[in-house]
Image 1: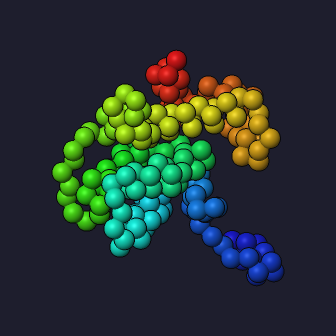
Image 2: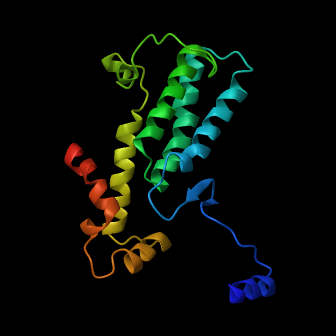
Image 3: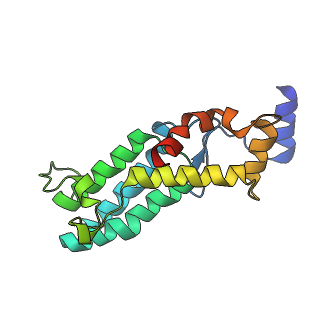
Length: 184
């Protein structure tokens, strides 16, 4: 403890705590919990609240969902494994925005979200299904790990978690192997 305080005083660094955020995404030592993903929810809600002051048609709201809000979710999904509770929360927020135009009131859903996710040619409205996108992002991370992509995070995984072990012995690979079984 004394060495740490001397080092902090000498270097003028400040002792921090987890989760540390980088580019808005929290880095945690274990699996991402729902409470760690609250910045994602708040970022999406802040965007929606900024838009609700203007009158935007339903087609405009659909474009905002597909272009901007899905990009925020996609950025997070490419970087971390999102829990299913967060995916459901984001989806319910987007449903309220699409059908009710604000987040504070209850809304009458006209079409189920799973039906909205079909392409327009098949009778849907062309939105993306967040759970499928999350599975694809998880598989992308698996691909990066297995191919030893040139990344500091992957080098850290091989040095700490995968030292003299196979990829499938890693806890996150075991928990998320359902993605492979469901997709393949």
